[in-house]
Length: 391
Image (cartoon, rainbow, N blue to C red):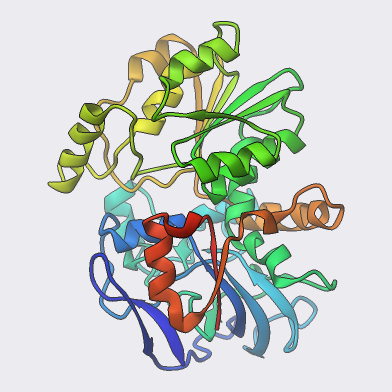
């Protein structure tokens, strides 16, 4: 089959790779009809997530048709011919974490748990196409994929909704929604969102759906801010104004009630010298993250507020504002998204027209043009917000 693979730092390559096959009785094979490039894929390509190997199949946002199931898959849950969206965290459904609906913390799905434990203190779940740190599972930027624990993860789509309407249930829509859900939003809340990429856009939409009085988008790319503005959100361009000062102006001097970091480890900063400091430290691996957005969210949030972190962080950062966090009674909430928890409720919101996932799609390309897709997405060419790939 054809698949998009990691080919070294700053390089992906579409190649012929072996077709997947059933390895465990709870596996399924999915013929992929749509997949996507995620912002967190760039962390792999840019070399900030360790344990990637040449030839690893990338991608963790995909959907398609079930063409084969293992003998242990409950036929009442999944059958050949079902149209499914596959969540990016692989979850067993039986461990203590899964019982608590903390699916991205599954205790049984990562065969390389020992590596993750050394990095994070405890294991994390397996993830499709996201390094050997998270299991080394082949990803979904391919014609076919093996899906472990197939009777737990995939969500059957039984309506006539298009792929584009439901594909992002695999990751970025639940991730954005969880970012807002962690904020315990009240009807008087002002919610600020750092990052107007696809996850940030969905965090903004979710904050609005959950009842926020005002949602503020923070980014520097004009086309991203225009997209947020068209969706009804207030915008701040951090290249033009000081973010914290502007947020104080917009909130009567208090700061936002809730802040969402939808950026993660490769953040940029409007002040060149601050950005250069962290960029150099990250380049020489003195730290693994550029935590500009996280620092700014903590410093900007009103006292007693909540900072929700859904941007991906991989290791260690410098100059974390622990004093502001502790002394001002801030609550910090975070996590890789527990996608399976949110898929069905969000599908119902899509069906009711409360959220339109298709609004972030700017480019649709055949799988064989994945290299071009990564180039325009990474470099923000042609006003690229989200790339969907068609195998």
